[in-house]
Image (cartoon, rainbow, N blue to C red; front, side, top):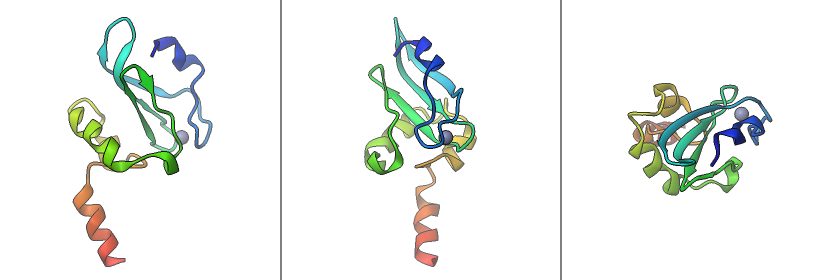
Amino acid sequence: MKKKLMDILACPIDKYYPLELHIFEEKDEIVEGLIICPKCLRWYPIREEIPEMLPDELRDEKDELPFLKKWKNEIPKKILSEGKPFTLKIKERAMAKKNS
Ligand SMILES: [Zn+2]
């Protein structure tokens, strides 16, 4: 995607603007990166130059966790542990489910 797109992107959940952009790989356009909503801490991947700004119910954890793992050294710690809709703390989530 082009960096300029950030001028018009808002969080699909709470419509917050402006969003934070983290670039992981860039050629003419941003190839891989992360868009973060600082209000609700949702993150949206940019993969193969496409920003995936989907609401939670259309997202698949299995499909997106590999992306978080791949870039975990570049992604802010807060997002890895508190981001929505998925975080890297899979084990803790599983435990919490068991106890509830
Ligand atoms: Zn948001």
